Each structure stands twice: as C-alpha cells, then as structure tokens.
Image 1: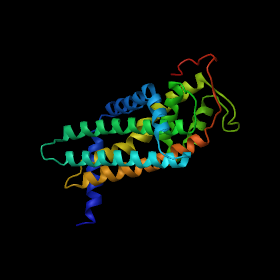
Image 2: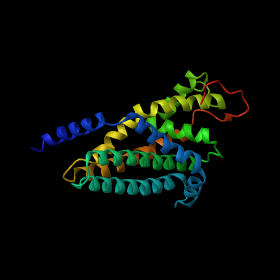
Image 3: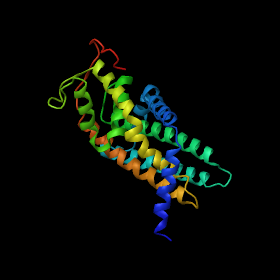
Image 4: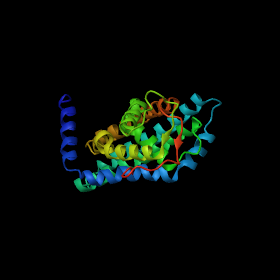
Length: 245
C-alpha cells in the first residue's frame, strides 16, 4: 500500500498539470517577478541591513533561516487548506497558481536581498530582473546560464567577466529568459504547488517540506551567483537593439 502512494501522487500531479492553462501560469510567474524587481529593491536593501550578524555568511544564514521558515509554513498551510472537502478542482488550480506567483515573488525578494548583501550598487530594474530570472531558471548554474544567453545576444562575457554589458544586450537577455521561465522554472515549481493539493494531509507535507528545501537551495545558488557575477557593469548609453525587450 505504502509503495503505491508515491506513484499515485505522481499520477495526480500529472493529471492536474495537464489541465493547467500555460498562459495563465506564465502571466502569474512574470507578475511575481515584475512585482519584486520593479518595486522592492529598497525593501531588500533595508532587509539586508537589518539582518543580525557581523559578516556576510552570518547574515545569509539568518536570511535563509527566516525565509525557509516563512515559506515552509505557508506551503504547509496551503496544503492543509486544499485538503478541505469543500475545495474543488477549479479552486485547487487557482490556489496553486496564486501560490506559485506568491512563492516566485518572495523568491525574488530573497535573491535581491542577497544581491544587496554582496554590495551590488543601485541596480536598474532591467538588471534586477535579469538577476532574479537567471537564478530562478538556472539555479546552481545561473552564472553559466546567464553567460550563455548573453553570448548568444552578442556579448563576450564568458572569456572576460570584467567586461561591461550593454543595456540593449541586457534587455535582449531578459526577453529570452522571460520566455524560458515557464518551461525551466514554472514546470518544476508548478508540480510542487499542485502537490500541495494531495489528500489525507500529504499536500501539507509536500508544500511545507518542498518550500523549505527549495529556499535553502535558492540561498546557496543566489549567493554563488553574486559572488561570481559574470559581468562588471551595465553600459546604459549604447544604442538599443530592435526587439530587445
């Protein structure tokens, strides 16, 4: 009986994923990213300054502990709510989409706070957007993934990380990353969000545990990305490329 539960859970999630409107999910994900990158940089800086600890690793550990507890608790609560018999399939999918957008926005807050801890000075919205998208999509290989996309747009930052990046190239990178968000990040997180709707309390375990682990990983991935950012600066005076946004 116990051996059949993981398979049943996978089947449940696959069935729910097949009914998801990809366009709705894409809008929810991008809305989460935009909400964070356009309006929450100052909050991220303030959060970074308020963290306890004398050195960056201590502050990052405190940040990781705080966000892991918060998002783990909310994921568990979402799972408990979805287990209510009165919650139908349509409501479950809407709740999963909302949870996905919320988790994405809070992950963006976390990424920007780590950027602030690394002393990144007054980044533009375009730069913040690129950071958040790169870490969410590529995870532990965010530096390599960002470099690969930038090089495809005409940059040469893999060989010379001290080189600047033009605003036009940065915006082209953001366009490419935005198109990749659903396939590379949304599918992975979407399965977890839908997993919170599993019955008999399993959803609460999936939501809480998965969010907790995901945040711990995200902290390490963002910390590594900002420790080795693959470019030195953004050149804002260059001519923009057509169709780069």
